Image (cartoon, rainbow, N blue to C red; front, side):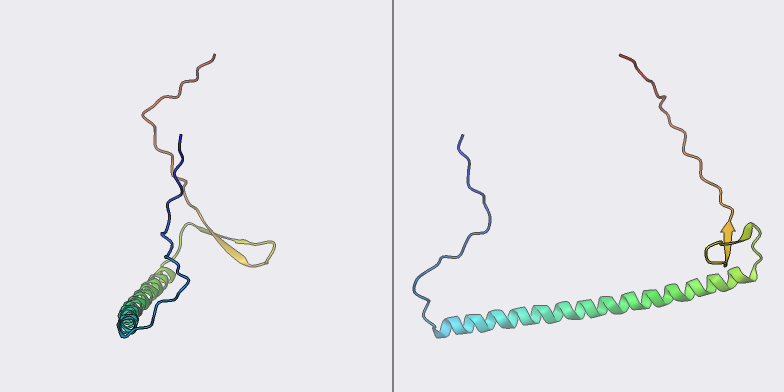
Length: 114
């Protein structure tokens, strides 16, 4: 069997003589630079807009969290136990949580011996 060569990027054609600088190549280079600059400026504006959206959302989440914590601190907590942490000598609150039961499977497990 014949193995084909790895296909990747096509390398640029190399020449021992550099291209001559002409007015057309200068304008082409300038055009490419201007287009890329505009693209990058648009991308930067989009990133700044997105950053502002994220900051606004974080502020809303902070407000909601603070409201929840304030309303939670007003209500007595029934299922909370306070214990002392031996390492830090600080009070640690433990909440009683119920572990969810795994859902019952429709299938039965069968073990076969050989």
